[in-house]
Length: 135
Image 1 (cartoon, rainbow, N blue to C red):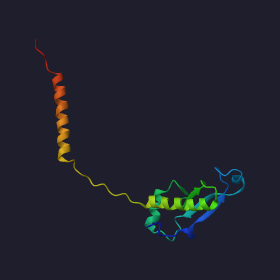
Image 2: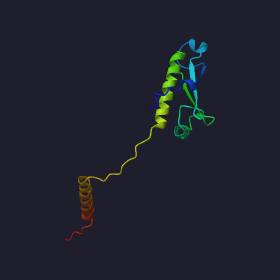
Image 3: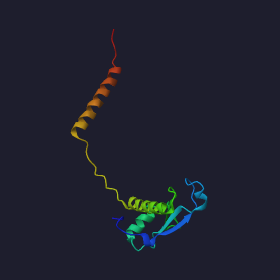
Image 4: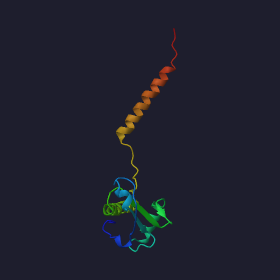
C-alpha cells in the first residue's frame, strides 16, 4: 500500500562525513545521507495518515513535523541513499499498520477440567497437613 506511492519528489537529502568503515576515504567523502520528509506538507498522505504518523513517530520528529532518517552503514553515498529510502518506507509501514483487535475467547472445557483437578489435588494436600493423629 505505502510502497506503491512514490514519495521521492518530497524527499530532501543532506550529506555529511560519516564514521565507520572506509579508511582514509571516510575523511574526504561525504557518504552519510540524511533523508528529511515533512509529514505535514505531504500531498501524498491523507489527513488521517498524517495524524497517525505524527502521533506514532513523535519521538523521531524534528520541529514536530519533519521525519529525519539517517544512513551511514555503507561506504558509498548512493548505497546509503537507497538504504535511507528503504528505512523510510519500513518506518511508514510500521507506523501506519493497525493492530488487529483481540477477540476474547473462553478456555476449552478440557483446560477448565484440568485446572479444577489440580486445584482439588492442592486442596487435598493442604487438608492432609492438618489431620490430627491419635495414638
